[in-house]
Length: 177
Image (cartoon, rainbow, N blue to C red):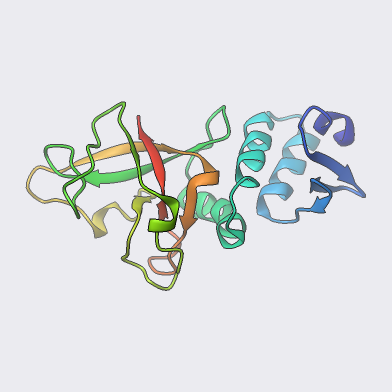
């Protein structure tokens, strides 16, 4: 029973087969996948946590586009409802663009959310960048740069730029794992 399965999640309910969050029907690729997993008896808890985190994001556009970005980039959702993505950095672990953010394992990089460009039509702009594996060759440091894995809470994603077939994004915070 799908309704009973989601009763453990605050703010989540099922009505007429649709997943609702705080009384609003959420009908997108993510909720279809959650219902499919439930029906097949597959683990869906990380996706429910992801949905809860995502619904804490103040950007409608980010909440509408983020899961499709994950699907296109084949990026995993973590047990706590975050997701993993990639980031190319310099040989010394500093970000390629500004050289100010230390991307060593265990570091948390963050900036004020209102400092991240939310316009998806501006493909290269302000914010902390992340990408899928398909985007990595488009932006790298050829002088011994490294590729890092970053963990991002969906509530912190600000934009998924329109270029490069849904393979990069901007956030205000991530943890280098």
